[in-house]
Length: 114
Figure 1: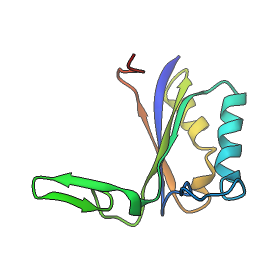
Figure 2: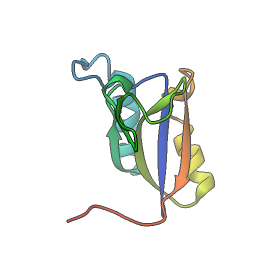
Figure 3: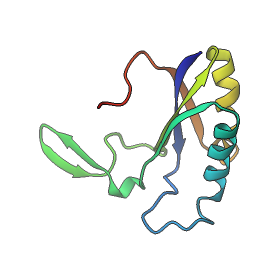
Figure 4: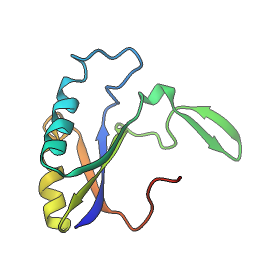
């Protein structure tokens, strides 16, 4: 098995500080599905783009580093036998049918820092 990062691209993150369980029902159900299948190893949701700060040589600015219609709303790490399997697993993410998409990248190295 190998690790693959799945980056979630959407118009914005649903995970605002005041998000309700109803607001998060769809992404939480997907995460539950991946956990139940034994695929998910880690998951992180980002807050909305307006909460991002970008640092450049000119200083700090409000918003994501790159201005685009969609932003990285979060990512998760899955364990899959190969890239083809990882694409099938990641292809079940609801953000795809909601107008966003996912990017699947093999993880080279790393892990929790103790």
